[in-house]
Amino acid sequence: MKWFLTIFILFSGWVLSQPLAEMRGIKLTNVDSNVMFSDGGIARAMDFLAETGINTVLCVVWNSNGADGDYTLYPSAVMDQYFGKSIHPAFSGRDALQRVLIEAHRNGIEVLPWFEMGFSTSYSQNGGHILQKYPDWALKDSNGNLIVKNGFDWMSAINPEVRDFILALTREVAENYDIDGVEYSDRIPAMPVEGGYDSVTVAIYRSEHNGQNPPADFRDANWMRWRADKLSKFYQMAHDTIKSVAAHLKVASSPSVFPWSYQEYLQDPKSWMEDGIAEEVIPQLYRYSLSDYVFTLDNSLANYPNHRDVYFAGMLIRLGNYVIDPGYLLSAMAANRQRNVPGEIFFFYEGLRANNDRLADTLKATFYAEPAVSPGHGNNIWRPKATILNEDEPGVSLSGDWQTETGIDGFRPGVLLTNSSNYAAIEYKMDVPFAAWFDVYPYVVSGPLAAKQARHVVYHNGDSTEIVVDQTAFSER
Image (cartoon, rainbow, N blue to C red; front, side, top):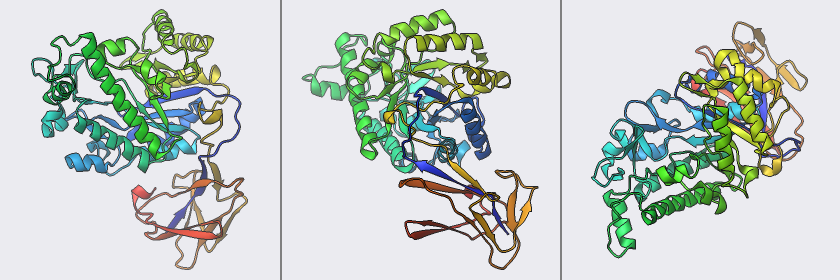
């Protein structure tokens, strides 16, 4: 049995004119949300976000599993090399990042992988499996204890082995996936100010200070600056790693609010922007009242006078049982625009779905009523929505014996199938408006009675490429 439904083409890496450029982003995580745990959930979520007016998704790729610490949420050869475990256990057998990319790009949404846990290895798990295998990676205080701050266990961002590991993960994502950039957050690069007394960090400090030990006072100004500069140097390495893969990839930072970020986590986003290390800054302006939000916004903006065009507000719309009031949200967004802040990124997806999509409906009726393209790329469309060609439209021809099956959910819905042993094919033709690289996706509904060797032939530039798909395999959907 052969099943086919429809085909869509993604216009990859092409720019088309678009009048309004405004960041409308959302963070998508595996915590307190079921979206990433199924392909169907991801597809529905991306459709919903596109309808809401969202143009950028920050998709978590590095997070704790709640049992023994951090894993990637995509199949990682780097993780397998270091730990013999290639993926978060709950995502085994799937590639959630690849599915997010397919469904988001189909909807014209850009995707930036988000390394949420950063240099934290676990949450209150004594470092988890990472520090169990590599105890020398642990970040220590002056008494030799593992640094645990606000429940998060930490490894040293100054340790060269730790840096190499995180850089390898970053390069892996940039090289293996058709992403639009990389987002580092409040734990990367970062180091709790109490840390830096592990043997590796101390040895590096001594080598640069004529054998002297670091100051016992972890808030010593020079000691803080030395560690912060090491973090900035790491970020420069990450920037160069990302850009070496593709110059168009965005390097985004979502730090805590400066100067608190520096005082507590040695993050210096002000310098990152001034030195061109980060290209976009998304301070986490997470406040529970409008007055606190506006106060924090004004103080934060003062630190980035030359980067207002790439300053986007990080806004908290849900955390635990808290969901932002629509009136507060609209007033805060109005404050952003009054200060020429060109958009925002919300934490997190489920806030839009709470109370029967109340916040999403509010956005669609107000600030997001007009479509907008994500800033960057000359403020042109970088990810046009896919052109979808259904089997009952002009340009599609059928050969052989095909029947319509309406009992199987598909894209229309409904699918075409054939039980014939004779030749049967569906041919899709569409006009290609320009020369570029294109992604071509046939929508295939998998099932045990489907064809194990379904031939797909793509004709291009007078040549053709053939792919054989096992339609019985769920992973091929």
